[in-house]
Image (cartoon, rainbow, N blue to C red; front, side, top):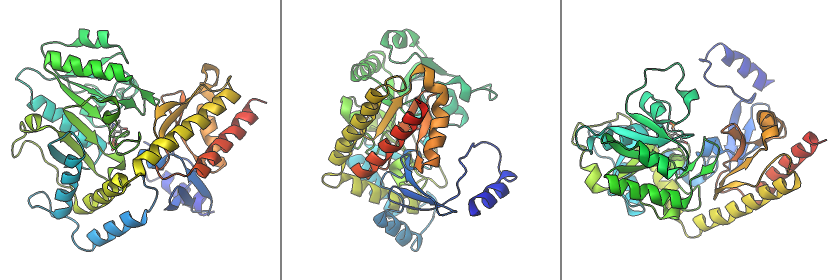
Length: 399
Ligand SMILES: *Cc1c(COP(=O)(O)O)cnc(C)c1O
């Protein structure tokens, strides 16, 4: 009953931006969530790649509580220790020399767009991103997003954003003009349907940037922070960007984003160039410091890679069992997508609903892929539970 009452009450209160599943979540632990009716769910979405260390990880909860009872906010007019600790960890474990802290993914990308323009010679302002990409919902990041469904109704969008076809280096080079300042891409598209860019293509993009004197911005908001089995996805293709954006899993649920860059690019920002009242909030930073320490602990990322192989293998096994419904899994580490056959894509949302009814949370991305983004701490037994639920649903559907 509790679910129904709260859902009914909420109907009149919110702007109708979200289509939600009928559950009021009240508690989380590890990979499990509990709703107001006491039903349990196996969370294979982790709040959209956010709660990578699981819900209410004790060490993170402790860091949040400790910081919340010490100092919550002072603005960026002053220094705080958690901020500096976080920046040091990010820099020591990435290519970057300097960090700007924000509160969300879109804000991290906004900062990246502003830095790319400011760091480029006058008259160079165009940014090329890719078809199918997702970079956020603010006006500039929505303009950078390569999916027109996110643009509709919001025109005129900020100028200077072009979209190149996916994985086509010749077409990308043809779009470069004397006004181009940067190429922005996700090493693996998340919202676009778990579509990895080939390592060769990423290498070729880096070469294009060097040849035409462009900045390379990687949006690792979804695939950074251990998701692919290395701390950052770029480590796997060996391509070093000039600017990197992070958010989602950085705070394991507390809102925080980061924009990282090399010294030569970062120096374009002067005092007053950019700012955020809440950015680098001490409580969010204390959480993020703990997240990084846990992810960098011996063996953690290796386990993510191993479990990623296991999940991919089990999903691909399902595709082999139901070849009319799904094709082999694609992804990297613990972001894995199961593409549905053309004849079944219309059933995608219904499949996700059936899974929800069975107590398993997953979503449908890019209009054709069942997307798994479990907490990185998921066990093999829990992966088996997900596969079992999918197997039952595919069996029901193919009758
Ligand atoms: C989620 C996401 C964003 C936007 O992050 P918000 O925190 O929702 O603003 C940007 N880029 C990518 C790749 C994302 O997955």
